[in-house]
Length: 168
Image (cartoon, rainbow, N blue to C red):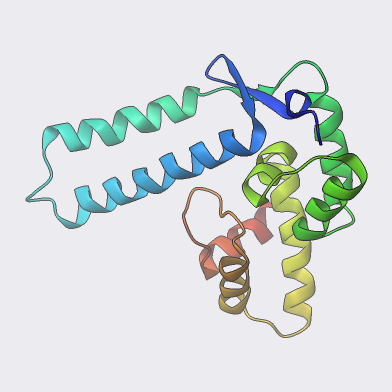
C-alpha cells in the first residue's frame, strides 16, 4: 500500500491527498460556472448576494495557493511531468500506480503535473488526432467521455481544444 503522506499537497494550510485537492477545485469551478450562468441567464432572479458570491469565489480562487507538500512532493511532480511528456494521461496513471505506488485519478494527475504540463500533453495528443482527421469537436467528445478535466470548465468543447493548441 502506498504511503499517502508522501503524495499530499498543501491546500488551505492543511495537507490533503493531491487527488482530493484537485477534486475540490473542480467542484468549486463547476459550481461557479453554474452560478455564473444563473446570474447571466436569469438576471431578473439574480440578487446582489449571488453576484457578490460569484465575485468573491473568483477572488478566493485567484489567491488560492496549492503547492506540493515538502517531503516528496517535488519528486512526485517531476516524475509526473516526465511521464506526461511521453505518455497519455491514462497511461501515466497506470505507470504511476504500477511503478511508483502512487494512486490518483485524472483530476489528481492534472493537478500534480500542473496546468502547463497537463495541457501540453493534451495539446500534443490533439495535434496527432487532428493529423488523423479527427475534428476539434470529436476530440472534445473523446476527452469528455474519458473524464479528462477541462481547464476552467466542467466540459471540453471545440473552443477549449483550439485554446490549448494556441497556448502550447
